[in-house]
Image (cartoon, rainbow, N blue to C red; front, top):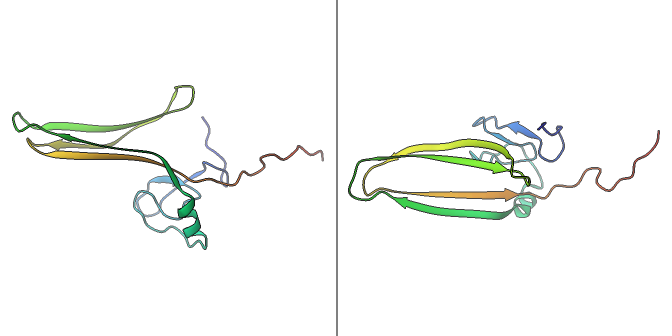
Length: 123
């Protein structure tokens, strides 16, 4: 899979604050929430962002037994079922009677289709 060209939907860059790979179009880093550049339409962009998937769940370690270790793994697959990426996003340990809550959200932002619907032209 090749990376999208700069200026197209899906193009990425690195956040200068936390070094996370983010979308090139982002005005605020979704990881560290720092503002990346001034944008007059930043409020409009925030309104356009929708969350079509949000999942939250908790686990509690029983009062008896030793500590648990956990590993949070995120896997993204395309429409053919092929794994596009797989990442460990967090690890940790839980002592008896401790709980952890995990949240996952997928945020999407409509982007203008560049070149979509244009006819080929001859030079």
